[in-house]
Image (cartoon, rainbow, N blue to C red; front, side, top):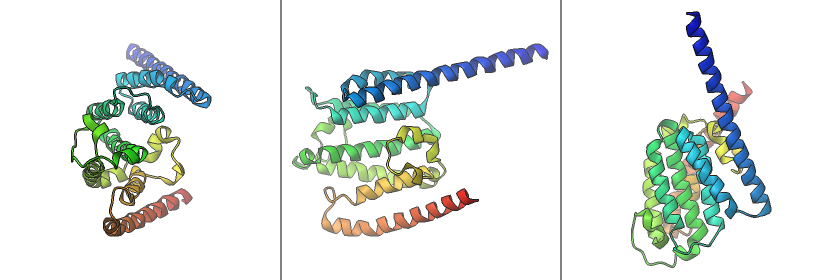
Length: 243
């Protein structure tokens, strides 16, 4: 029994050391990224971000994977030297492949993030996208050729699927993933991931580039309902904080 206790102690000690070493690696890598960003050398961050992704997938570290994907997406949007015009397609194809390794809360958060990436990409390139002829394609490997209708249909489908997971999202604490959303405005207002998702959906339904005037009027009822539920969630959250 005493021997077993010693083995268990050594195992826990090694595990603790491994976790600390791993976290130190991530901390150092993110520090490099912050330093490069301050210098304006965003492209030099891409190899570092990809190394973080590789390590995160190896360790099944969903938080670091999500954070690194957000960073990669930011780099793609900030740089324009894409000779083959396929960097976005490759990125979104990678997103779809990466979700296969996730489950539970991590999978739900990832699906929300996928819709957020898609909507942000549309907003970043809407001036170009809106000039394209409607195709009604849902193949992300061809996203550089998508029209406004493609993005609208894709996002509508994704948000409807996520709506069916609203009760599950309500149980996911936003604080658990806050490090991946450090640049999110008013981050302290979100108690659950449903809160963050709901406001992202409001932004989508309010977009006057994707929706016609009549559609925006129809969307208003849904938006009002979302805000009512959000206010209730906030009231419950702050009441629990006081207690």
